Length: 541
Image (cartoon, rainbow, N blue to C red; front, side, top):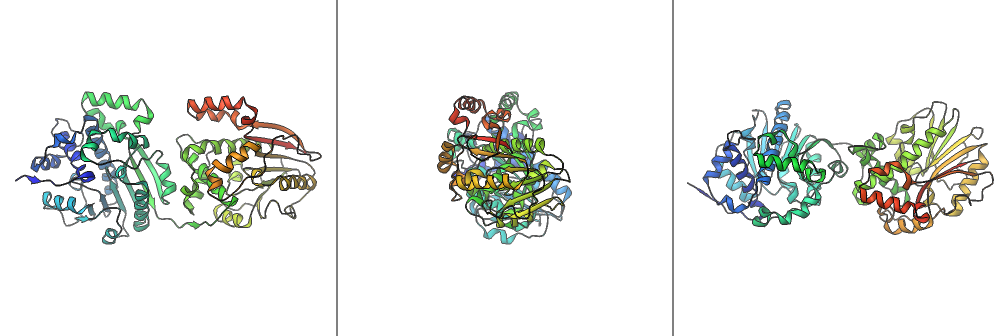
């Protein structure tokens, strides 16, 4: 007897993957070989052709299903006592396709009417397999799931239909609830969300996409405890060799264009609930969290520029919602360019027996990245609350010292030996000072040490005005920039001489930006005002 289907909207989309798996199983050399899907499709009274599912859609369905099955099988082989959460399971027969160990516990979760239909179509299931009728965005259903075991979370064809807020909240709840395990799910690129309005399948079902993930590493920031283990575009999976010739051609064409290739990826995350350090910072002190976040994103990119693994580790250990600062992954290059330029010149300027003053150090790992000789005395200087947080994140060293004082404190240099040459490094500091405070700081340094060099970045006045209205790290933290250095030769401090002025628009690393951005940088570099929006200044005394 044929089963009647009464599903609408996003619920009806579960019939598309069922149809795709059924058609694949009827091929002589299937990718997935889901015989249960073919049997179910034949029992359902529904015109599948009306779904307007094209061959590319069906290829993506069977390829991602095969990849998730393979990775899930690996997890179960390693953890036969696992708890498996199959979120938005629809009519998928994954629990029957996999060799489910007797000790494992499997939970299929979906909306009540989907689960009611599923229970009719799958009347006989093992004792260690059960269904839960609930929206995955609700919280109560988690109370029925045992904890304390390795946990595998599977969500196929779910995340695009969630809002980002609901998706992030769900992932956080899962990490907090289950402690450790893995997650397997597919994500679509942000441009796919916009293009989805042209999908015949989605228009027919009345469903829509909401959430696209550009860089899966971003989820590590938004969901503390997640660790990305892999992100594979579905069109690059081995199963492509088994699809129809037309679809193989489509896959090769998609793979030739990276943004198109990444339209849909299967991502694999490990997760472990972590004990994190609470952060309560406001104003200029909070802006250091934005640069820390961006250095971590650079480290997680395919080709990191700075290789700041210490920033990455610090972000994981802090209990802070970095998304509130409004910084995006594409901002990471500019921060990494600035930090690398300073690092390179610090290494070049270091001499045996020097003192290094790292002013406004924030949570920067420059000491670790530069790795100064043991006879260099290094002082990390910042506000007391910043230093207190810093000391929880970075290991101590016999030649590294911390000073918890404002750089504008007249007694800042008290206790720092004055008989050595000094190298002063300040990144992202001068613009937060007023001009009188900044000049007073430089005068005290020149007066205290016998000789030295200063390396710091500076904005000009137009850049100060621009950042005060357009930089999210500044506006969202309640900060304000003050000091723009328009003429670096005109500081008026006796003995202090400008060695070099280098615009960040001239940095070779900007070649990593897309061509339109590179052309804009080249044009801006030819205009003195724009060329001085941000640059590195090197002084000697």
